[in-house]
Image (tube, rainbow, N blue to C red; front, side, top):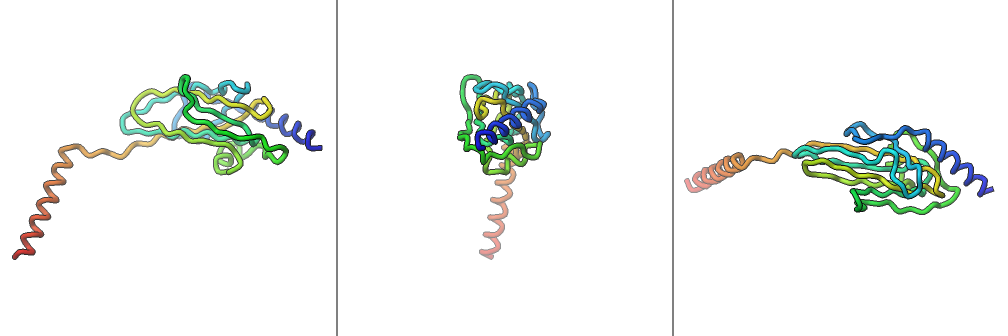
Length: 179
């Protein structure tokens, strides 16, 4: 009975993963969750390589979450280096299949594998997601890129004026105390 359920679950997950449209090439920031699919165990996802650019003062948060069959594993690669990886083990027929269709259920659930990687500094970024679907079947996942403006850094002249103002206030308060 468990074997039949497992086969059915894997078949449903494979069908669902293959029917998802993948993000291709440049990823657009701040659009929310976008679907991607891993067609070959150990290979790159259909949406890889992801590319984006940051300007001075911007930071980016790249999130990946599974939401189909619990037990899929993913790795974030920058050229030949692994930046971040999930680790999980297939736990049998207790696996949940298919969440809300936009990634948020998988991201909020403790059951699904996920990771977040932060980028900072102006420049062009390119990376890929590799993975291993449970039992070698295709795996669906969701990705999200959020880019935010950094805090404004005061100019040196502004800091000097602020310092002079604080020194002046301290001197005035000291004079009042002495009088």
